[in-house]
Amino acid sequence: VEIHLLSVAPLLDDQTHSVVDMYPVYVYRDYMVNHASESERIKLGLQDYLDQVVRGITAAGHQAISAVRLGQPAEEIISYAGENNCELIVMSTHGRSGIGRWVYGSVADKVLRGSATPVLLVRVQEQTE
Image 1 (cartoon, rainbow, N blue to C red):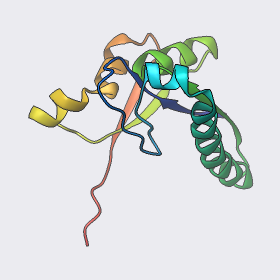
Image 2 (image 1 turned 180 degrees about the horizontal axis):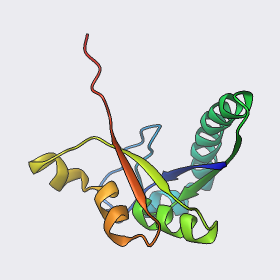
Image 3 (image 1 turned 60 degrees about the horizontal axis):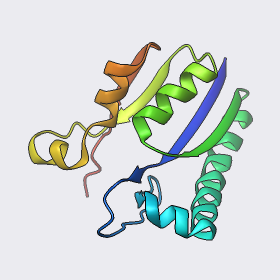
Image 4 (image 1 turned 90 degrees about the horizontal axis):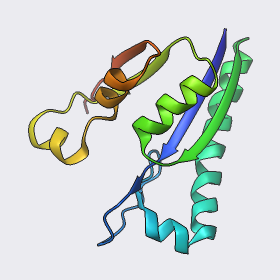
């Protein structure tokens, strides 16, 4: 079994303001075009994170590959799965509904409906304090 880890920094079309979070990263397309060094910094940060995850997976005796892409998350996930002949896409979902789903959209839903590759969704457990 070979495990592929993909992180996508979404590019949003709105030009009014940018929000940068690590894991995932939300940035505006024009911002990234005009700030190539910032794009590289974000990609390197994501790759560093994935490299740590890969080390843990390989230490457990499994093969793992990581990739970082910039683009629309659902489209990039579907494309990556097709390009790499993946047999299964496993994604976490926050289970948002209502306004949260409307504001953030549902990448998991778009992948589930748009992918020819089977999709397994795992609900994120909320941490209690």
